[in-house]
Length: 203
Image (cartoon, rainbow, N blue to C red; front, side, top):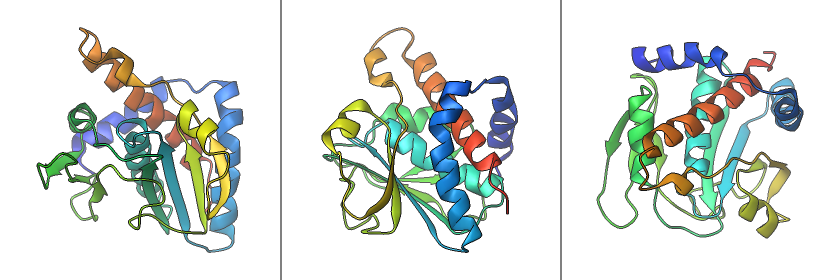
């Protein structure tokens, strides 16, 4: 794990996860635990409307937390009900929190390689629909990270289970003086909750 990222993770204990949120997260804990107990692959697809902010943050932190807690066979994905682009502030925020990020293309929908450890495969990030060929077609858990995706996709085809774990959109602060603060805050909230999820898994 990169040193600055490890420091960020060690400081997550200062961010409380409320009992109400733990109750919401427990279904995801149970899903992952059942997969671990059965020695099965764990596929998690984080879904938001545009696959531009919250779903990417969730995918990256989930994969990182699985590694941090030594939980193998975890494969994290993200997608939207439509494709746009991963917002540049997401990459900037994650880089500030200790990830290594390389921009692989500069078109309207850039591709990023995100690394949490120098010896681990990078997470490949770009905006796509949740049913894109890059994502799993079946045997996965669908985590709905926003209200629109949750309401607009009452059924996610191919998903074994569906978990509404929703986050406020940092986009609301784009162009404001507190934009950087709010993106960092949302990223750390997601990180702390996924830290809780993977810390509960018994291997």
